[in-house]
Length: 251
Image 1 (cartoon, rainbow, N blue to C red):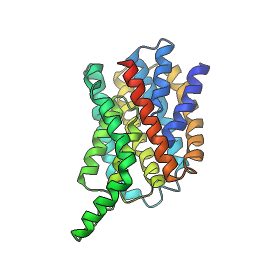
Image 2: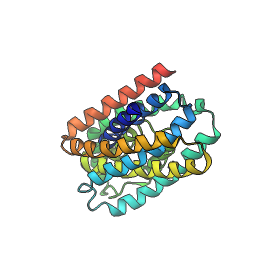
Image 3: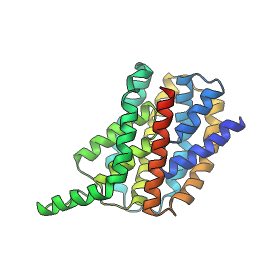
Image 4: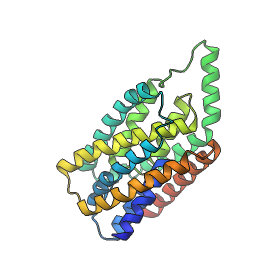
């Protein structure tokens, strides 16, 4: 119980700063003997309150983003629902090959984001255009696909979302992080709703993770909001590399 609670705190903190808290809670649940699918769905449900806590902690950075959140939130809800259904009908190995590729791509995009953003902005300016305030159509599509992945498993979902938002939106890292927290919350929430009705949940485990994640969400918001852009970008990459390493060892 103590291990699960502490893992929830750590996951809530990391999820708020960047995402990938599942890399802590999921292995912890497996280590104490929870079956993989039960661990995955219980973890998803338990992290929802932590995601809400983190989003509240970033409320200042969310100011003025209501229309954007409504638009991209639809993509996350649809993607999260799709991913949750896929988890229940597909074998776990189905995404085994693509997950490391997605995480690696996310890390590369986060590092290259400033240069890519400048190039995209310059090309749009040369054409006499400006990037849509809430992102082009491809941003919506990629947010949907990130939601599919998040609903299916979720580890490093934040890395992917930060890469997408960083390239597709003209915003600061901190405001993108605030948007990411809300989108990840929606993915986890809709997936959790699906799991409540059709999957077996270990409610004691989910409750312990939830309690820890709420505390971690506030800790993560306090730390994350004070990080400069370069430090936040570096932290995202470190978490992404850790995710890649864990997947490599697991497979």
